[in-house]
Image (cartoon, rainbow, N blue to C red; front, side, top):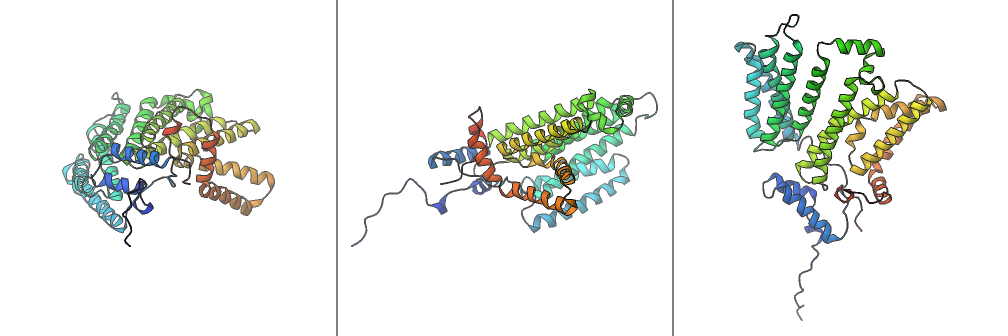
Length: 372
């Protein structure tokens, strides 16, 4: 007796469920756009009645050996173009680099979507724009006369900033935002430095270059760096909240901006707290690192902790010296902490998010509840 046909089930079989990698591939192939990918991920989550675990923070440097092979060719071709440009004067190398990088990106980035070559092309395009601005402005400026050198150097970093933003606007490469953030920070520091007299006075008064980034000395460099870091963090968070499932390039934009924000925030706070070493400053630094770890877990952004790695290591080493564990014991303790944090990240994050009370935007953070 033949079996009666069964009605289709609302729940798709496990092997038919599209995961984040499938949605990213669909966006890359042009089948759907980023907003549709995010909405599909949210729909799948709501139909399953739970927040599915995302797993590792997505990061892709290259997709295969061919990316590395092509990237090597891009680097060689770029250096050859710079050398050829020397024959056309001071502007030659920069202009050759700008034209060559943009032209290659039209194919390798826009059409082939090759990750590592695209990163090199973004760097080459941004650096070449700075080189062209150097030949146009710095070579014409009287660095020791009445013409202010600060405007010439600011024009160089400003040109690099515009180039990075233009590259992002055309090719939507998230890494270009990181280059833009670096160029913006360099422009900010040059503008604040002026003729250099203020920086020299701050170094002398503070007893070293670290005094420039000490909030306790009310240094304009420290305040500007902290504001810059918070601005990058806010922009990164805006990208993260629009793509909690990490399926589109919005997530990658957030990653690179977090990578720019982390050092600016962590180094400024750390240098300010540790300017006067002692028990209280050490306790405050430990509290700051703990809060940073909680924030990184809540946002599911390990990149935030990368900036604090050196300070975490120094604090662990302080504990090792106090306990007289020796170098071997210190390395083993530090390694155990890093492994434990990395391997237990998902479980720690789930417990933290369940323990935290509801707050505005909590439901827009990356998923944390593991599947049943």
